[in-house]
Image 1: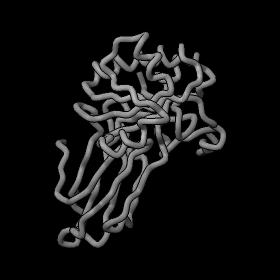
Image 2: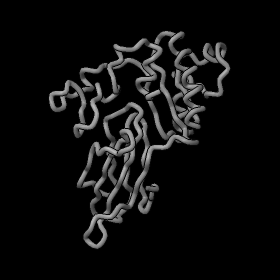
Image 3: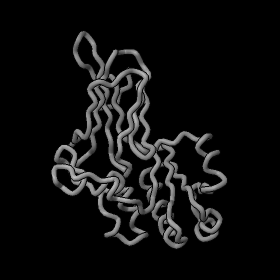
Image 4: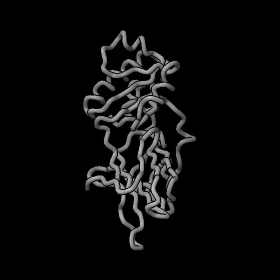
Length: 215
């Protein structure tokens, strides 16, 4: 099914999918979040009383194939008025490298080169090793200095998706869903936490990016 946009709404994926409805088409909306699992779309979250000129951001921050549906009310019946499917093609994607080891960041950047080519997107990397990385690797990826350029970059560029690459606390970002020792939404698929599909302790540091971006 093709995406549609019959109301003024916005969807971004900056450390989680965010939906804003900027339209009085209906006094209340139904918003649904789906993720692609195999060839099917699994319902993850639904909001039945979404008001105009409000927004909602879902907790999950790792890269996911999302589909967002918004239903309005027409003739007292629900009608699909907006649908957006996650699509990185020609979009600006920001990756924030959070890792003190330069060699690990260099290996991440090599993987990001391939990611950018495979998904035909414009990738930007925030890093504290901008100059060193530029010396060690000839890359088309735009590098952003974490301290001096980040704020200006965000103000001047439209970012479709933003992912933080690093090792963060899992215990406080998880949930014992249905006694699964993790996040198990609608009995669809088990994830370790809101930030990682699998526990990063299982991976070498250079492979953590694979876990977050699904490479």
